[in-house]
Image (cartoon, rainbow, N blue to C red; front, side, top):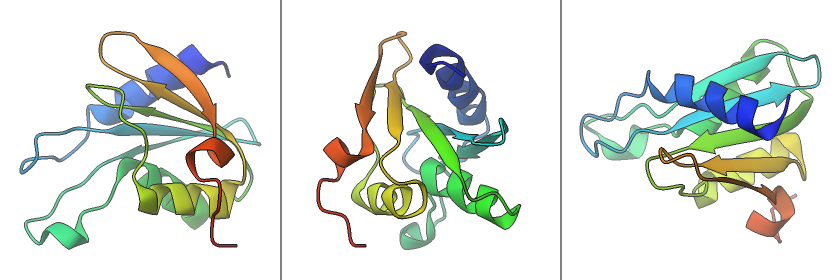
Length: 123
């Protein structure tokens, strides 16, 4: 699956986001080695530390389905933000140095390797 296709999947996932406090919706699409795409969206809670980011929702969902090998992940936000520090660690820990596709709502997109986003992960 190419970058643009996976970002379109992330955009679909973003439509399910529950961001009633920040109003900052995020969608993620995790491309698995078996060809499956797992969606994730951010889900906010009034107790803000219990909020879960889209990237971790996608990875944890895949793991809960017995999927453990990943090829790439796409993340889409209104302004093209990259994953937060917690998500960077989880992505690296469970997916390794995969390509991370970043997109915004204006159609801008680019690819960055996970090792560029998190050069010194906890391993």
